Amino acid sequence: MAVAIPTLTPLQETLWLTLCGRALDNRLPHPILGDEMADEIVRAVDYDYEKLHIPSASAIFIAHRAKKLDEIAQRFIARHPDAIGLDLGAGLDSRALRITPPPTADWHDVDFPEVITARQRLLPERARPHDIGADVLDPAWLEALPTDRPAVIVADGLIAFLSEEEMSSLVDRLIGHFPSGEIAFNGYSKFAVWAQKHAAVGKNVVNVAKFPGLDDPREPERWNPRLKLVKEILMTREPEVAEFPTALRLLTRLSAPSAALSRKGNVILHYRF
Ligand SMILES: C[S@@+](CC[C@H](N)C(=O)[O-])C[C@H]1O[C@@H](n2cnc3c(N)ncnc32)[C@H](O)[C@@H]1O
Image (cartoon, rainbow, N blue to C red; front, side):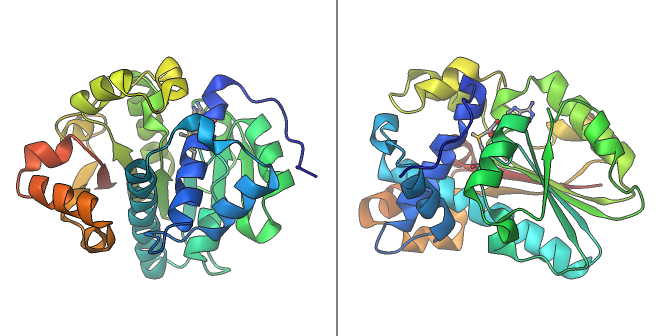
């Protein structure tokens, strides 16, 4: 029997797109991420992913960006075993399972309370070390976290649903709270935001999206003077492209030499403070 979960708002329901994307990647002969837990959850709730019309290229891009964010978190925690890890707008993602932080680090997944209830019903305890049920824009949840440990903060698919002012004040609060750390999230260019509005896939996402798009990776440095760009990761140039199915690999390699073209697609923005 399928597991019952709370009724989700359209904004919360966007978690299915990324979860199903990772599940579909896992079913490919050569998965980019290999997120078995995502696949298990989709099967456990018997979610009708076909209604989302996720092309295999989109599933691969979703899995690819999750992998890059995992790597950033893993590298940071390897350098700072006492780190606080935060996944903002975590949905039903089981990142902690993939990155396996040591017991000295504390990994927190933040999302709305209804989503956290769904996590508790669907994810095993080892996949959700600390769940925080809150609106990320509410300053109260952050105040409960230690202020004396370095933090690695990732947000996969969240920024699309915040205005630029909301994102910049969230980043400002995070930087004010922790002594040092890194922040990484998937960026959307203005073109990507425009294209999403006209794409067949992800209509449910477009209706609740707010972010206007970001063309200059240095723009967030203006959100807080301590924020410095580490790297704009143009995914077209990442080694996993070699594992893409042939047509997608060739197309991706065609756009790789041009930063402008690459920015129209999947990008990870990585900062330190
Ligand atoms: C596209 S989903 C991505 C989920 C997850 N990161 C993943 O990769 O599967 C966006 C998530 O952000 C959450 N979200 C959006 N706005 C939020 C807010 N203001 N506070 C907390 N969570 C939020 C939604 O509930 C949803 O789970």
